[in-house]
Image 1 (tube, one colour):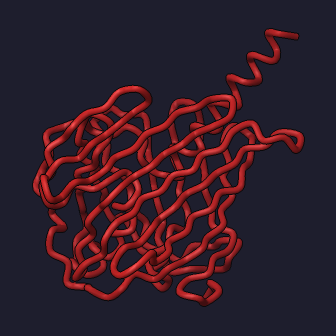
Image 2 (cartoon, rainbow, N blue to C red):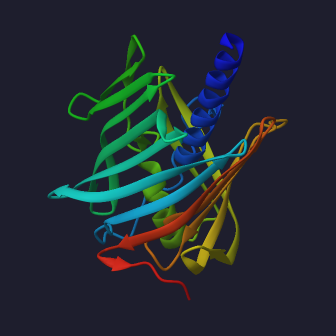
Length: 264
């Protein structure tokens, strides 16, 4: 009995972390020296569109409900939030809350703070505070902390996803890169547009951009995201394939800028 319980707990921990890593699309990437951000100039300075979105996440035969919201806090400051709760027989076995506050100023995204809290059968916390006055990011992971030098274009694990669609649509780029604070490192994340396609979802058929994560040669992981072109480049679908299997995230419903999302 004890062994069975430990095995079940270990499996649930794996499922929860797999789902969350896929939802954030920030699983470990190429650790490298920061590169010049090829999306530094953005011509689209229009305000962002607040939204509330509901997703279904699937991994290892289990399912979880996930939520993603973007809201205007004040002035040009926005808050982006992810949340996932995994339940078993009606009981909560784990949850994650992830958030990013950033300033959207004249088309430029400037991160202010990032928070990640995982509770339940496995716990973990992470945070980054961006001090642009002194060009320093204070990063913490579990019980460790680091001070990292800041330069324009550096972002957190969550907010860069808000910028991706705008960068691709306004700059006409087929590849984009981002320098992301991850614990004691600044990692380079590379993405490539591979197609424009109409995607069938529970929310209806949607015009999307299909974008793939470019990983180190030989990596067994493959991450693909679909963004809704007609709905502020909202995340519609995310799929990650690894040695442990396939994890999927699919949009169920959403409200964008006060309007219910509808298919074609």
